[in-house]
Image (tube, rainbow, N blue to C red; front, side, top):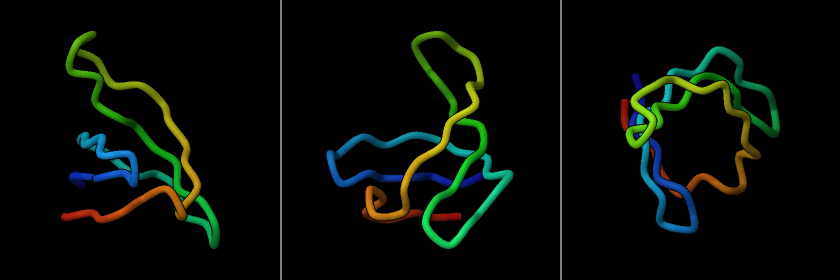
Length: 51
Protein backbone atom coordinates (compact mmCIF):
# COMPACT_ATOMS: atom_id res chain seq x y z
CA UNK A 1 0.00 0.00 0.00
CA UNK A 2 1.25 3.44 -0.94
CA UNK A 3 -0.06 6.90 -0.09
CA UNK A 4 0.22 9.03 -3.25
CA UNK A 5 0.07 12.82 -3.51
CA UNK A 6 -0.39 14.31 -6.98
CA UNK A 7 0.79 17.69 -8.29
CA UNK A 8 -2.84 18.90 -8.19
CA UNK A 9 -3.05 18.20 -4.44
CA UNK A 10 -5.13 15.00 -4.57
CA UNK A 11 -4.12 12.24 -2.17
CA UNK A 12 -5.17 8.60 -2.20
CA UNK A 13 -4.17 5.07 -1.30
CA UNK A 14 -2.65 3.13 -4.18
CA UNK A 15 -1.66 -0.50 -4.72
CA UNK A 16 0.80 -0.53 -7.65
CA UNK A 17 0.89 -3.54 -9.98
CA UNK A 18 3.05 -2.06 -12.78
CA UNK A 19 5.88 0.47 -12.68
CA UNK A 20 7.34 1.56 -16.01
CA UNK A 21 9.92 4.16 -16.99
CA UNK A 22 7.29 6.88 -17.45
CA UNK A 23 4.11 5.62 -15.81
CA UNK A 24 2.65 3.55 -13.00
CA UNK A 25 -0.56 1.54 -12.83
CA UNK A 26 -2.46 -0.33 -10.18
CA UNK A 27 -5.48 0.00 -7.94
CA UNK A 28 -6.59 3.28 -6.41
CA UNK A 29 -8.91 3.41 -3.39
CA UNK A 30 -12.03 5.46 -4.14
CA UNK A 31 -13.28 6.40 -0.69
CA UNK A 32 -16.61 7.89 -1.84
CA UNK A 33 -17.51 4.72 -3.75
CA UNK A 34 -15.78 2.55 -1.11
CA UNK A 35 -14.03 0.39 -3.71
CA UNK A 36 -10.76 -0.22 -5.53
CA UNK A 37 -10.51 1.02 -9.12
CA UNK A 38 -7.82 0.22 -11.71
CA UNK A 39 -5.84 3.39 -12.42
CA UNK A 40 -2.80 4.49 -14.41
CA UNK A 41 -0.87 7.75 -14.27
CA UNK A 42 2.21 9.43 -15.72
CA UNK A 43 5.07 9.71 -13.22
CA UNK A 44 5.38 13.47 -13.89
CA UNK A 45 1.99 13.97 -12.21
CA UNK A 46 3.11 12.47 -8.87
CA UNK A 47 4.48 14.97 -6.34
CA UNK A 48 5.31 12.46 -3.59
CA UNK A 49 4.55 8.99 -2.28
CA UNK A 50 4.99 7.11 0.97
CA UNK A 51 5.06 3.36 1.45
